[in-house]
Structure formats: C-alpha cells, structure tokens
Image (cartoon, rainbow, N blue to C red; front, side, top):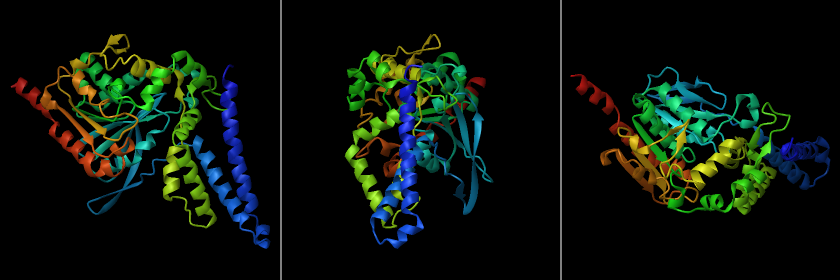
Length: 420
C-alpha cells in the first residue's frame, strides 16, 4: 500500500480544486447576484469557470477532433479505426471516407512522456492531405490492470516492431521526441530478426539518441539524480479509484507539476489573463488559451518500469548511443540497418532535445550508405515547432514528404532485379 496514499492525495487535491471552481461559478452565476451591482461576482464566476475547466481536463483524454477532411473540393468524413489493439497501446488509422487510399503510408510514433498521442493532432491533420496516417495511441497506465504485467522500454520497442510488421514493408515511420531512439532500435531489431518487415524510411524528429551530445536541463537532471532517489520520489501506486489499482506508476499529475514549474510565471500570467477575458465575456470555449491548455494539461500516468528504464538505459547508460541496447535477450545492432533511409530533424532552439542529440543516429548507421542518410536543422525552431506549427507546416513537412517519395519502392525494384 506504500505510496498509494500520496497518489490519492494528489487526486483528492485536483478533485477539490475542480469542485471549488464549479462551486464559485455556480454561486457567482446565481440570479440574485444581478440585484447587487458588484463586478466581483463577474470575476468570481470567471475564476470558477477557468479553475473548474483547468482541473477537470487533467484527467480527461482529449478527443482527436479530426472529423472532416477536404479533398478535391469535397468534404470527407474522417473516422478513427483501431488496427491493432494491445493492453498498453493501440495502433490506430485515420480513415478518410469516400477517398481513395493515398500512396504514402505513414506511421507516426507518438511519445509516451506524460501527454496523450493527441499532442500530435496538428501533425496528423497536416499529413492527412497527402498520406494514409497511422499512429501509436498509448494508454494511461492507471487504467491498465496489474494483471496485464509490466511495460518497459523493451516492451515499447517490441510493440513498435509488431506494429511495423502488421503494416508491412511499404510503411514510412516518423518518430517524434521521446520514442526516437526506440524507433531506431525497433528498426534495427527487425533488421536482425525479420529484415523483410523493415520500413522504407525512418524520420527521426527531435529525440535523444545520444543525450550527451548536447546537454540540456533534461539530460542534466538525468545525471544529477540517482535511480534510487528517482524511484523514491517519483514513483507511486495507483489508488483504488482506477482499474490499474496497485500498479506502480510515474503519475501524470506529478509530471505536469514539473512541466508547469519550468515556466511558472508564464503559466500564471496566462491564467490571470484568461480570468480577465472571461470576466469581460471575451473568452470562448475554443479560444487560443483553451485550445492550448486542453491539450497541455491532459496528462497520463506512465508505468514505473517504463519511466525508470528510460532514464537509466537511454539517458544514464546511453545504451542506444553506445549501440549495446538489448531487446528480448537480443543485442540490437544499429549497424544492421542497411536498406532503410534515415533522416533526422532538429530545431536550432530546441531546449529539450538539443541539436546533436538526434543526428547522432546517423553515426550509428555504419551499414547504411551515405546516400540513404539525411539531416536537417530548422533555424529558429524550438522543440514543439519541429513537429507542429509554422516551422513544421512550411519547411519541415515538405522536406519529410520529399524524403518519403525519394525512398519509396526501391526495395521492391531490387527484389525484381534479383528475380530476373
């Protein structure tokens, strides 16, 4: 039962603040307040509205919100289909109804780093125009029964390998942030175990292949804290309220607290400004503030073994960077990748995975011809900008699509030549 009390304490605190916000909104919106011409009732109602929404969305998985798609002057419905269903994560497909399947087949590998896969919503929408889009949809660990067993970096890698096998060799992988080294490892694992299942291309965006290549606050934290300290302070046991009761996790609320603390003053100002706008009647359900924080504040728990093994094996021991990563008893050799084109994308102002950490992957690909390697550093772009926003839409996305087109179908041509 150790740590379950602290998990429930965090949930009780969140629930209480949500209740306080709802209560303040209800009281200040009561008809009797119209008899008292005091603007404080408007401020109170605005505070309640913003507070209730803030704490309510912390436990709610955001909707994808991608319902229609316009192509050829026609609107098409978009449905989300589960292609592969697993206890810790699914592979889903965005199917555009009434439209012919696109030639490009892309699997987005979403991070499991505290936020849901919906963090890549804008990335998905931008790719739907030209691609058949699949994405890894990771589940909240608090909702997974203990009976389903463990889930660590090796299991994550095996999930990716199985998803690649299911989609077939015509797939193009785009990995974003945290899963970049594991997507590279999954491809190398297939190169050794099932070469025909490897993807056509692998695009790695802003991930820590070699965390020591360029130090950031994230990598410094990994160096400063011992694994014992991390396990003692960060890991808790899911309370009885959820299906995963008893499972050891790194709580999403704890992760969110660390996110907010990094830019506390900016977040406080943003919420103060939103309360003022709401009191003046200038806020709306889908304004810029709510669109951003509906996603930012929606957090999920990670299994303790995944979080701890990520810190220990990827950041501290640098097993990917040293090319000594072991999956399912098999030592993965990155150099075994000889026929998968690999492109790295980094942001010049990325303060989470700094330039140098991701491009280190190309040095590990000793068996891959230089003609199949590419890299790009986006000037002025931060971490978020390299997979969403203006930098992604205007500069990076076209480069990625060109890279995909350049490396489509080549393995089939080689097979035909051999057959002749």
